[in-house]
Amino acid sequence: MLAVLCLLLGFASISTDLYLPAMPTMERGLGASPGELEYTISGYLGGFAFGQLLWGPVGDRYGRKWPIACGLMLFVCGAAGCALANSVTVLIAARVIQAIGASAGVVLARAMVRDLYTGDKAAGMLSTLMTVMAVAPMIGPLAGGGILLLWGWRAIFVVMACVGMVTLGALFTLPETLPPPRRSGEHLGRAFAAYGPLLRSRRLLGLAAAGWFFYAGMFAFVAGTPFVYISYYHVSPQHYGFLFATATIAIMASNFLNMRLVAVIGLERMLRRGVVAAAATGLLVAAATMTGLGGLWGLVAALFAFSGTSGFFIANAIAAALSNHPRQAGTVSALVGACQYGGGIAGSGLVGLLADGTPRPLGMVVAIAGIGTLLCVWFVAFAQERAER
Image 1: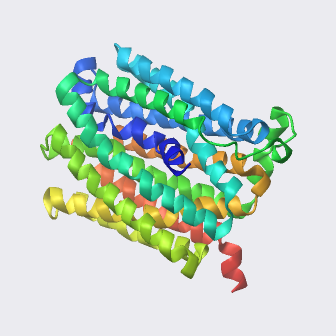
Image 2: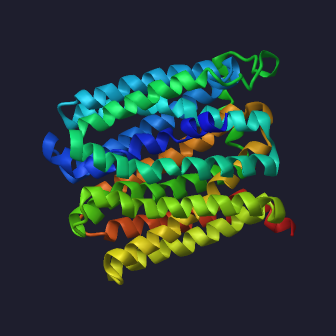
């Protein structure tokens, strides 16, 4: 179960990180500008955000496995479309289809964890999964660079389709974690309407908004570094994967620490400390890009620090959001996930929109994201708890 859940949760990374080293090559091959190629990430995130809102209520109504299976089949079709694309417009459209399919596995895998665990145990389990699945973004750019060198960029999407087929087969080795008696009996129309009352929860709204900001920073990093590292600092596409992997090591290490500390310190205290670190390291990234201090390695170190704060934020924020709504785990997971990837759209889109051939737009977006994450958690999600103390 751990292995399959890691695969499902890793689909966002597999679908994005694998082709990052190929973006400059794809730009030339499709006759597109760097900004246009970055919209393949924004388009993917848009489909991913919409897909989560779709699959969450469907999973609460019909169980977890069959909606995930449908999503995986859609993912495979989208990956095939990317491999056959002859223009950047077709590529973006295929990426949206791919994202809608991939989102089913991510949102419902988190719901499966909530089906089985609660509170600090859910946060610990999510940290365990994120620690293991962090291998995907570590090896993704390295594998993508190798595939690009041997067979070209289209082969990268063929590999994605194959991963989707393997995961589909593995899915049916798992039990259904939401048996019929525990499923929502509402019609889907009413289930979708449940998003309204959830948004009236200040705590949930604050956590969702914090996820929006944090993912804006993380996907600014994802969308911006291929051009900053490869085009600005002249790193080879094959070596880009090693630099990208440093951030993944930070994510793995912080999730491992969170897994150990959350049971001792507590979920909410870990979350508060994590967002303070996110704001501080976001400002560090901005300083590195604005001053050029340390050159390439100064920026790599600053992004390493910012990425490392994710281990103290993502799992804890999801567990905190799910804790008060156990019978709507799929819907809550979808809402939080959609906000996160909606932030990713904004972050990656801003980096593309503001692209000026320097690292400065990347640093600016990451700094704003870190500060926004801090404000949403401290002054929206946990404002009442702070007032009571």
